[in-house]
Image (cartoon, rainbow, N blue to C red):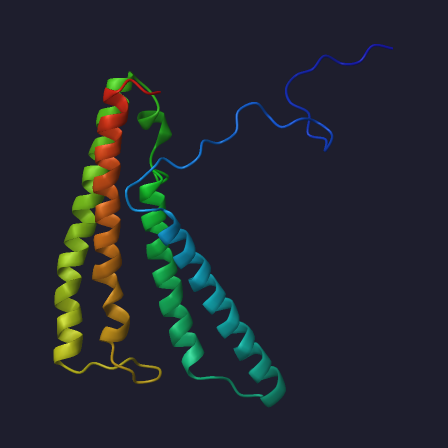
Length: 184
């Protein structure tokens, strides 16, 4: 009996690794490990807080009042930090039909245009959120669940938005340098 012709890579455990593995992160002046470790810490805090609340609810039929509010804050912060990592790694959402087609010069321009737009958006968010933080502080706003000052939560929006904008600017610069050297 003859075996069927090979029509692509096999999926069994004994097969060798594919020849094309994903590329490593591009070198950046500010290490990408900052976002990676922040993600690990935030996820660890979320897991610990949620687990503690489950245990308390199971054994006492009550819960920690602060866990829901703090968990929501951590999830929002996690999304922002992950957004920063996505921008730094050039993994943000795009329509690949447009971004991956055409000449290298067109791809470079589209990549840089996207980075400029991301930077502009997050600089605008950072600038506007500074006003929000100031208002939270000035008017002594408190959080609805546990009554801590609201600016404790809102102060992170301009900080992380600025970080995302800086990562986008860095991506813009790296894309310009990479393609000028003839890489890819």
